[in-house]
Image (cartoon, rainbow, N blue to C red; front, top):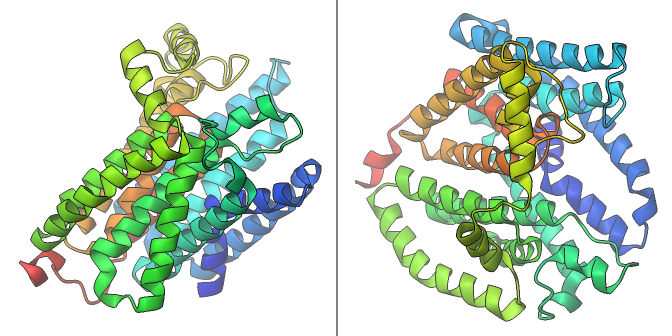
Amino acid sequence: MNKHLFFISFFTFSGFYAVLAILISLGMTGVTRYVNVPLRLLTTIVMLYVFFKSFDRNTFKGSNGIYVFLFCLFWTVYLSKVVWHQSFNFKLVRTWYEYVFYAFNFCFLPFLSFLSINFSKYKNDILNALLYSGLIMGLVSFYLYRDLLTSGIGRISNVIYTDSDQGTISPLALSYAGSLTIALCIYKYLYEYISLNKTQIILLILNLILSIIMFYLGASRGSVVALLLSLLILFFYGNRKIRVKFLFVGLIFFPILIAGAIKMGSAVFTRTTNTIESESIGGREKFWLDSWNEFLNYPFLGGRIEIGFYPHNFLLEVLMATGFIGGILLLSVLIKGVINIHKKSAFEEGYVWVMLVLCQGVIQYSFSGAVYFAILLFFPLGLAFSSYYKPSVNNYNFKNQYD
């Protein structure tokens, strides 16, 4: 089971894009789809195995079962709307079965498979998989874009304007993978430093450096918000020693982070400050306004699931597509999940990183991506319910250990 969970956790986000980066580095950009789909099918099979292997009826009893039911009901409503669109020949960006496959692979199965496991037993396997996937993606990205690190390119997507033959990884994938791995590396250093050996510390530092480079290359404004909120979470749940260490590291880390962005010519901070000054988010306001108007026109069960394109905000997308009904269903699960993680994180440091991943997911899919791709949202939500209803045997108040 450890290997299976490591596998699906590895390919949850960064590992998947690491494979794409390897293909691009080998000049095989044209065959990425022929690798992506089989890889997703394989992760689907492994997630199904994990779910049925770990299935426990008690997991789905009581209030936990209620929220699982609400989650399943939401996706039933959403996918019913997809089929309805197809039946009445409404325009869809994708074929109807792609929505079903993506929702099943990125949202439904990750939630149920990670909900069904004993979090306390496998939490280190999952966390290590996320860290190693970030490390490999960082290494491949560094190799692929090493000549651009001091070129002042601003953002990796700008490469297409200087060399149309140069394949690039999605800047959003780079930036959010960097932000997520930075947050997890800092968590590991602050909360689990005492358990690390020298080799692990060196790998952690290397991972942090490579993740910062990805963060620079992607230069996404949303990833800046995600990173800042993640740092606040790390500070909030830390005990007195962790908070002191956090402030000390911050005095060194932030100047280096800003200086590195200037040295590389990254636009990550300038794009963020420009957004604040201009009060514009790269044209997303039109998507958001159209989605909101669609919801107002059909508030009960929603109208169209897309208006030419998804709105780059999962909440507006849900309201637009499924109305109050779908919005209440999904928000109920999300809010309960946050409460679950908060309760556990307040007493055990081992659950704080789940809050980090959920934070990253909420921010990412509030500014980009479609709800049926939101694996970084639904994967930690599954862990949220697993972590709360399956606490570790040796539960103790971590804060009191050092206070």
